Length: 385
Image (cartoon, rainbow, N blue to C red; front, side, top):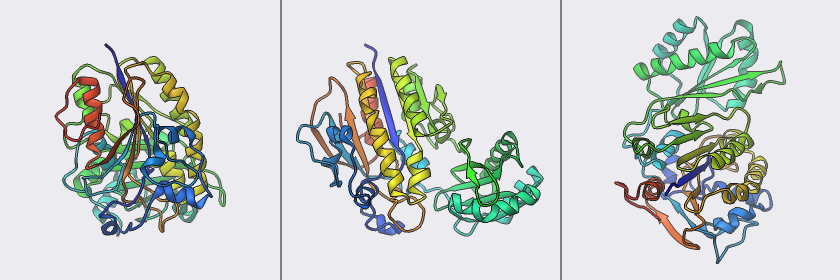
């Protein structure tokens, strides 16, 4: 019998500080609870029906004694709080060693090699908010077409440039080469293209972001499903996060969360077996990092409205999971990710109802459950189905 799994990562929607959060400077964080509190409550009735209010206390969300499926949360085994590590662990791969970060900027040799390849000088080279770096350096970038290179608490090298000064295809080419250079001189998990448009005082990032990632350091659930000749469809930046490894079809989103939601609904209607793996990045990129609880709340409420259309189009044997990859508490200091538990909400028309899975010891439990569902077996521990 054909069946599929739909896995949606609400990027950065953590549900409370992990026991070791203080080691990351994140003591007391809670993305979902704090944004709801800051905005006087949140209305997410469909996730409420799935049991989100049973995982933690959320202002405006009731507990549900008759949840539609499984609910609980998971700890991150990998000692990190970045997107790549979180997604890899969700897919069954624990990272033994954290990626390198560059709180003092990248070494001169890395910058020199990027300048030699691109024939453009580099400005900035320090940790920065993605919007603030444009405000502070875009005028200088316009003078001679320099590259604005910056980083964050994550293992990323980001390059921002005005689309009218550096054509997008050229910027993609520079960033792709920059990942090769970083691999040799200053390893990172990702190099991110950050194009923008506009004029002085009104610069705006465009939706043509692209992530160039290192491939996973070992086998993931995606590989195992693909090796069983099952489709693995990545929606949004999912394929980028895995460097395309294990992905059989990449459906990019070019606009916003709603584009990703609509592409997920379309895939649910079209695909009868395998995995649909969606990342909704706006929660993190537009609202978490920018410390915008109101925007985060509105985006969650928008997403929640589309859940019935997703679940109503599932086949009887399908599995539907909502989770996150880390936190990014929009009420917390700074602009970086936060070290948090992730929520797990799982539903299927023929699955058991109202099952509290408690606290899973690793994000790997998600991969284990999907593999058990689709393959009938798994090499991974922690399955909650």
